[in-house]
Length: 449
Image (tube, rainbow, N blue to C red):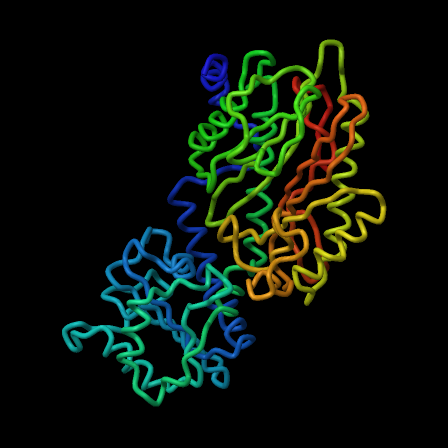
């Protein structure tokens, strides 16, 4: 790792980000407090809005439903044996039963409703709970359109229906809308935390794209990627995908979108005059970030990036503006995509938009606004034209192609920032990049608005 190893040793005690990262015990407390709030305050509203009065989630250890996994207490890293959760909403009485057909209470919020000594058969006990409450609808997590809402495996689905009394069979329905709303909806307290997550993410990127990590002519893109992974580990955090760092320069031809993934050259030595790009995200307090940012490597004698790159970033910001102003409640992802692309192209921009939900998962459930290989809109039966809801978070991910006469080629300005859509419209969670980061850093240069 050459200079990277030295940098890690020298700068390990220095935490550039201003946010205090909690120790594990405090993280667990915060996670459980937020979970309690979500179960007691958010879930009843979501069940009412989606007209499901009983929601049943079934998982076996190490094969967890992705929705159920978000409902486990902080000290449960997996389900135990077969874990069955039952939520019953009585809207008239304004009550919500939170039950577990399991040997144990599932944390402090969901109490065990199964005494195995009295009823050895777990399925029979589940049916007793259904009979006692007589729900109008029974929601299960199966879905053709939404992968995160499709967590019920075939074995448990078949076993559930085999045990379910005949009179309830026609009350079973997909809980996909409820599952997606649970995953996509953020509470006010979660949004306070989200600001801190994005601040940490920005700080790690800023340090990675600095002279503390990069020595032009020596450091490679792969070394910077692994420095970012090491930094996350040192901070006691996790990444949900491996970071990528790539280079665009005058002597390299523009290639396809996969340049940043499987087709991206590794171990490219970073040189003065390079435009650097990274894709990076962290996981903390059960939330995820996803950021793509740009840096310019100064040539000898330079104190700023070339004007054509400065203007290129402004074009990228303009595409962001076209997208975010078209994010309106009730519009589908395809509608937002088509309108944003048309308006941006009308001004001469060459945009590509592939914005996705962000939150409990990195590629989360909710409104997807394009894919890099589906700029005409995603398939209608794909579930990805789901309408925009409030209190949701997105990775505002996109690019615009610009021509640089000085380089005699096209390049892409690739950007991604966390954004929140609430009752007052859209805002960035913790700002967005409006200036290129510089290597080495120039005094007074920030890079964000």
